[in-house]
Image 1 (cartoon, rainbow, N blue to C red):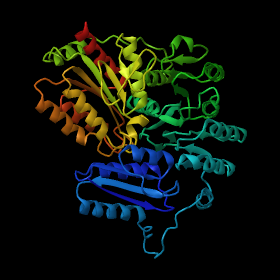
Image 2 (cartoon, rainbow, N blue to C red):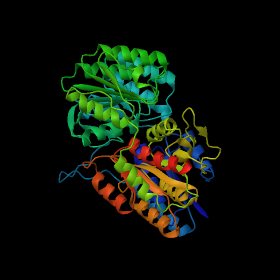
Image 3 (cartoon, one colour):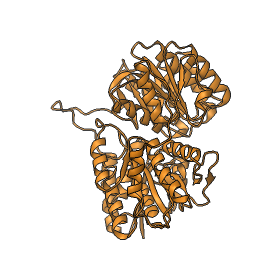
Image 4 (cartoon, rainbow, N blue to C red):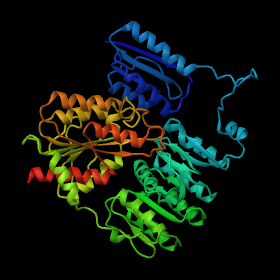
Length: 516
């Protein structure tokens, strides 16, 4: 096997664009391995774990391209193509004969757009806090897409922002919709009267998309980053967002989403929520809804129910309805599709691109009495000894760092998810394969193109295949149509639920009936 590595000194590109280039390379049949990234310590470690030798000199300001394949001449050609992508000259601006000068600092960008009030920071983690602080000192709100920022740095940034009436979304904030503009991994939803604040990226996507599907819309969708509700940070960004949405005349309903916060932080958030003179819908995944409700605060059991209660609140009906039991029609449909399953097929296997979807699925399975394994287990689930091999009931978050070392996130490049689905489908013990498809900006432009081939392969090579159950997180206004995606999946025999909770309940019902 041949390897080619090239380093570009002092060349910066944002992580999303580099992951997309890596994903395209990995789709090529003549490429066995590929990584295009900034030469940070983390990325170099991941490159080494992917089987590349670190026999080159590069630092965090440098960009590297590493590819592996059988044909040396082909690799040289591909390397030249990638170099052309990375070093292309600025495009001609019409007939003026002038060229655009890229902004090389926040100050330059602000000079070019003096009315801007938000900076999106996506640089290697060791530089992210400094760039965010520069932006704050220029009077800009900040969306900090970068991760690997310490809690101490996060606290310093957020305390400075709060003292100056500014908002910091992040670190590791991958999703937001501000004034109708999707940022990071976000979906195209209609404007409307519901404001959302979330410490979960795919949780925010699921709720905003579901609100859109129910006919309403979003005023603002604010991401806080996953550590905002930790005791050390104290929920600074969520609290700031709540006060802002409380004053916003375009926001009639406020929605809060997070995994359970630190108890003291949860109490602070609840106290403010009860003071706001607008209905507040809260979903802290795994928390008992009854412990959160009162004084205009209503709690949901699932992400989908959160959206339904928010839309209901617009009509004065935000109450929570009981979830869990499947209606007779759904039970009959599930019984029909399991009629030809081999007797050995009795376990649930989940392959998720969205970490929050995997988390929610585990909670719902646990509540139904179906325990199992995961690489990111909730309380009551067990940790997988080998993340690459499932056992009994297994739900896997393929977007976790252990799976994305040296490769793009499965929302960008679904190939790893597809490989896992094929592996689970060919396991004679698998009764149901449960998965998500996430649409929107930043996600793969063709999220199920290879999945179609994967499912066909599983169906053609096995006399008995498991039931495939999916849900599609997105809208028909996204770059990838949700309706067309669902139609394609259903044409393959996949059962497509309206949301992640419904998909999980279908899967759980099937598996419990086969294990009883």
